[in-house]
Image 1 (cartoon, rainbow, N blue to C red):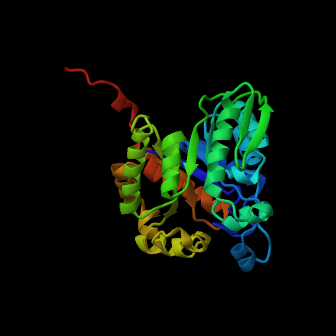
Image 2: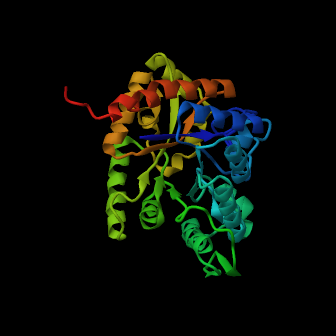
Image 3: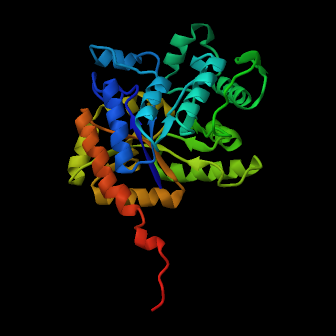
Length: 344
């Protein structure tokens, strides 16, 4: 399994206290992840503060622009993938954001993974698009994905949809990668169909394990119906990590984290919140290794944009390194394993 870390680009008040991370901290965390052997670092995308965050915290959070933040991270690292988990195209001008995405892929040497989605909070969409409060966001996302594909591949691109419109755009340079890896974020069945049709990855949030297993099978079936190889889409759920020396310590640390309040604010998605500890990487190193093995057995390929439930950046560094030492490195084959044994 591959592992990547969620950088707190827009996580203050959601998963971490306010204030939490500076620009320098984002670069520091990325370098720690690169040294520790993670596959990538991903950032989330918010343009304004959610109502429940305003009610709980006296000060507003720092929500850094995810593409600009990742450009600094790319410049400070050499091999890490950088990704958006997730970018919300409906809150931006599509030709402008396509230009930013292609530029970042160029500047990073083809390390970008583009996760897109509806956005967790409709209230945020309505704040940015007050003239579109009755819009079906899923249809907008479908048009945005199709529009991005044209801008990334065609010499002169046009699109005339209900929500996305542009005409005779020459957008150069194109991304280095062709296709640019597209991860479709979200939990619902429409998201699975989008990922099967267009995506190189499916990036849901956590699910109870039985539900995750069922939806992975739905994804594989939908991908096959779309005329693509059954395994063409990487299964890359975003999980959270809380390591403890004992099971009790890990559970206590998780339940006092700000991430719990965030998940409660998203209870409308229908996930069984009573299973959030069991379905995420919460526990001792031994327990987490077993959870990873179970996730692999049901078809998860990438623990993507891992949220570390911490209150300080130093604590986050400690958890990142601990997880690498206890979970990632013990799973890596040794050089000796790669050498065929010679008969004596």
